[in-house]
Image (tube, rainbow, N blue to C red):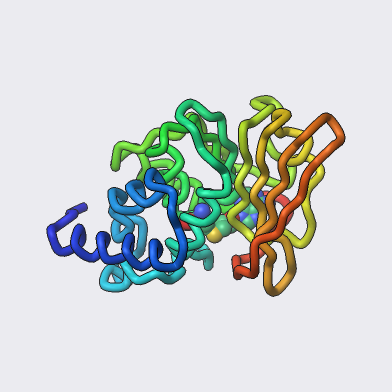
Length: 213
Ligand code: SAH
């Protein structure tokens, strides 16, 4: 679990890369600059950890591309103390970004293997989400709702109603919607039944699947 000067240097280059691609939020850039992404990946991929690319992790899933993580996080407009629900814990990298921004984070993962690995790993690095849950993110997390924001990090064939219903008024849902290719979509809850919807270009995620595994 080493973080060397070389890693730190590569990480700074990665920050510059995503800045050039259009990420402007300073806190988000700082978080990407701090988190040792190489430790979230299988050792075989260590040399690639600071490329702006998605990579395979356990259970046939992927750690999202840093630009995508930054883009989604920017759309959330995270403030210290925000209560945030993440769907798709995966490697825990996005979870760590949210923790570092001072959010109170709940994160759901449907793959038992990943849930177990990441539950052990995150606290080792000092990231402490409020709760990691093994379950099905389509249902959200009713008992902890409402949330300031909800982020889905898997490609959703449709927008789960449960998630919209678990937002505070003014709350934001950031979700990639689509089958093969997804459109990054932001919903802002304006009233109990009133949602503003905006779209932000195409991305590719592993699919959001129903039920836990
Ligand atoms: N944020 C993660 C992304 C991992 S890929 C990271 O950066 O590492 C997406 C993750 O969503 C996978 O781990 C997948 O198992 C999980 N997933 C897919 N459908 C889900 C669902 N219905 N509920 C919870 N997690 C889900």
